Image (tube, rainbow, N blue to C red):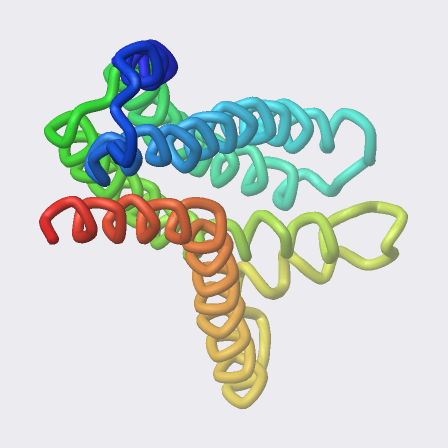
Length: 207
């Protein structure tokens, strides 16, 4: 829908006092949050792929004990598979909604529906990842040779007192909750604001 041509035709016909319907204005305005969501999502895909490569490169740069190294690769492999799963969903979303130049009320509704489904997949992946990532991070901090003693192997094999074990379990669960909370808040900040704006535009169109 070419809004500039519509306005030009109105000017040519000298329709004094004629105002562009609010629905057309809203459709034009909706292009901004849609384009911003797509731009942000493309950037996030690139960053996530770069992070996967970086994390897998870490054991080749820093010397680690054998058990922490093996655990690191196993958990990072599982985490990466889940990450690639929701990145594939994001790529599918971008391809499905590639035509941002022709907006109608229905396409905006479809866009909102698709982005919400995509974000649910994203958050589900983060829930799983938030339970695995703390272990991978523990191998980095406690399983490197330069760090001295292999504290990770003792922690992983539960060679500790009951009190220490309870503290480790609590710290593990707490770190998972913190990682999940930060990631979800970050996702809402990146995408939630623009989705809310699109929903407000649809409400104005209904009025």
